[in-house]
Image 1 (cartoon, each protein chain N blue to C red):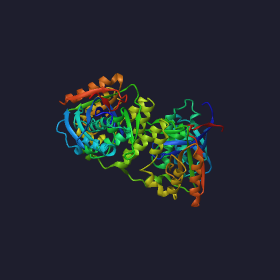
Image 2: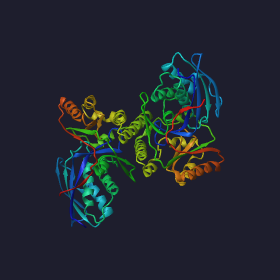
Image 3: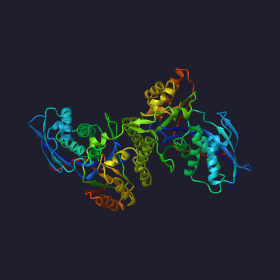
Image 4: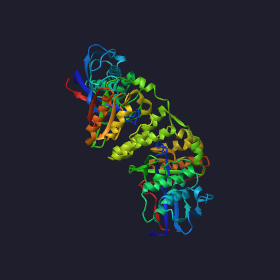
Length: 311
Length: 311
């Protein structure tokens, strides 16, 4: 093995992106998790510490997203090697910013640097998916893939996932507003209807196709017209007190669109660069008007995914 | 008025394109309808003759797709002008090749040439949609838009439709095989479930997004992986005796994908140019093996929409 310790930073991410439920997400480089993995004489996977903004995560590897991802990698690629891991959480728990995905991605990216034969990103994606399943109760990739690859990322397929980085028009920024409340992904998923009516299905697919076409062709008008989730958001927005007002404030300030980040409660908007600060202020002020504190970021979507950093 | 008579050719089209139910279609320039419109001293819209491959279509304007489309245009843009129209059908009735859409498109494109102030293509689209609704019982645009604009065309929205021409990789051809049987669009629509289950929804949206991304980036591998309709085709394929065998034959011959054109019974495949003739033969032979005669075409999708031709 070429080295005995490596640390990876894995960015936060916005899943769903309004019209791409379970298939589309973008990375948010302003925050993320750092995971350090060491070779260990002790077999299996040992989590030695979890620090940062989240407390009380399980230290038992099989019940921890990063631990489970690393176990999957170990089983497939390094069965005779023991790993020790420390996790520094930069992404708040239950924020809808892909914290569990980032920890899983950080773990496999760091461990990959310790292997004699590094794995492909698609292999790492599959292992990280097994970690994410621990947290969310289902195999979805809309946070894993952007945290790993960076940028706006589409994933097609689960057993044989194919990843596509979709270009975001250069003039577009993402505004991320995290209200200080906690939602669980499992609960947010459990509240969804098990079916979609046909007319909503057609409407949503038109929006998805329009959004993606708009991204490929720098067509901000089409992105704006397509930026509406008619299926998931109407079911979930009740979990976020103030959702409608915040969304309206963002749109009035010039946003291209505004919706829920993943399962929430974080909200996000897309905006042109010149309107981004106004959109941020509008959203933050709208939450503040009802006494809700927030953290908030304005970020580009250039596409830096998880990477090795200094230990 | 600048001229008193004009004739338009409007191409056939493949609606749905497997993964874009009601929103995506591509034009098929190898066949189409020709519509001649003349100014008339008689008010309203008069259909004087319908010739070609279809007989027994209604001559009463309000009950005819082309007549209804022309009435809509007349009401909005030329209320004091009478129109006389002849329709030459090149697209078989109930073939799933967008015959009713082509007649409606031909009518409005021809009439537009007679107006002092020509309308936009989006205006013409809206009038043609009103004609299409007579035939299918619903306002959908996945045949209208490609027949009017040409190429592979996405339409987002109904009241304020936005049209996007999506580039098809240059190496790709469409194979169209029309078995000699007739299906009605109304019936094919009526048999569809009113809802979609959530996992099929996610799968289909991933395929749609992958297909469109593959078109924008010349990614034939992704187009092939995404070219599967998990929602409509499983419900409708029973209407086409031999569907499974024909599809399997197309795929075995190297097709990127194969599905139902619109409501059927025409089937289509996409293929690279070098495999296109083999795919055509495989599909034709598979239908022939069960005694079903076919018409068939191999065509590019360069994007010629409806246009004026010699009267």
